[in-house]
Image (cartoon, rainbow, N blue to C red; front, side, top):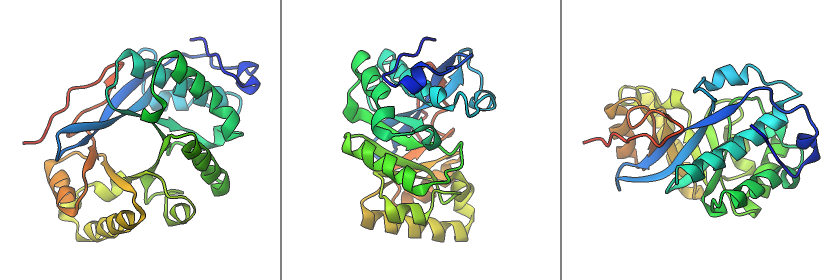
Length: 248
């Protein structure tokens, strides 16, 4: 795969010695029966797992990998004619200067004729973020460009209240450890209800990811969650938009 960017750090670097592709998993509004977005998930060129690729990432190829993921996500989104938003994961530690590192994304969106207003930038959980100020600076810069922003795995690791105090994204994804068996766990219900109340006051939409059972979905629906993602609804489709199993 050839990667062309407007940043010399990527263009003149070592690049990647392996090819990547994308799978897509829908984020749906169960109440309206509509697709809100598709999350682009990196895979190997033959469908290898994200983990097998991430194990090959180091300080030398982190930046080219992040850029390649963005470009490949937009290429496949355009090829598949994704009819909704596309959520693209990014690695904050790979972003040196937000305005510079976004150039390849802007060029790719123009080249593939994909509307900028349908792009969500989602902070990936794959790396530890040591500099919260750097992360919030990236998110603010992307918002100024007109992109929506999302925080993954809220409630785990760096994705907590301290981050939310400094920057309020358009979307947060509840950590799946809060979701798992929530229908049977009063403590998890209390924690999620408090998070939802906070997000309503901050005008942040909530996505419940990792939904695996109808009981989990119905419990969260009763709390007011509208957006869902998980195997109950659809597994990621490699180089395709998977069929959605709408709950009865």
